[in-house]
Length: 346
Image (cartoon, rainbow, N blue to C red; front, side, top):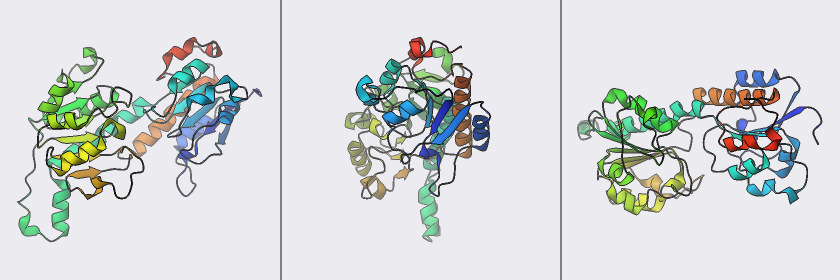
């Protein structure tokens, strides 16, 4: 039952391993300045699923990786639904039952403006590391193989082809960052919007064409039924033998076994992998043994810039809810027609 206050539950995903807060101080100050806002940490551990009790206790939740299951919104689940805003610190929402949220009158908010540049920068870092043979040269120097230093020949980016799968905020930001290298830009997307690509020299092409022509293939797409294992053995066979695949999207977009086979047998040149089909990956994952792979731990984009902007964005959304206004960046804009949100102003 609503007690007349606005209650915010914050996931323990916003705590470091030592228990200290990772919340941006400015974001926390903004939350603390909201009249009548009661702030609590959720009881369950970081990354643990959101519960029905959470939905009935809080008006808003700030989460990162916590799963939100459709079954939580079943009217027979018990308790009176109180939640109206689910603020996701990040852009991926494949772990959130968005349709169920919409049906229940819960807004799902993400932070694309905070994430686009850090993620695009991490992809660019991968491209440059492969271009300049950074890891092999580092290993040779550490091993004392100075006389072999001319054996590693890099591949300059200028004039090469960058293929971007997914032309949303992250994909377009990557193309902006790549402009100084004067590369050829190919893009594959299910929803063409030429106005967004103005000035980025991007050629919208079919996926097979992009795979066959690109020197670097960057996955910037969401995980959904259409993209799950989209990069399978057939897709990898379309790529050039020297081409580099970079995945900072979701591990499930790639058939990991097929990728390992292609890397082992030299059917592609290498891979930059920040996300895995299983997270955390098993210690004996074959990707760990391959020299033509650069690995992250689903964290390459995690910088102070990303953290502060995403935290502040979520805090701003909660602040808007407190004054009965609807936030931008809703994943489920159709939810605004729900009777539970009828009092929210644009």
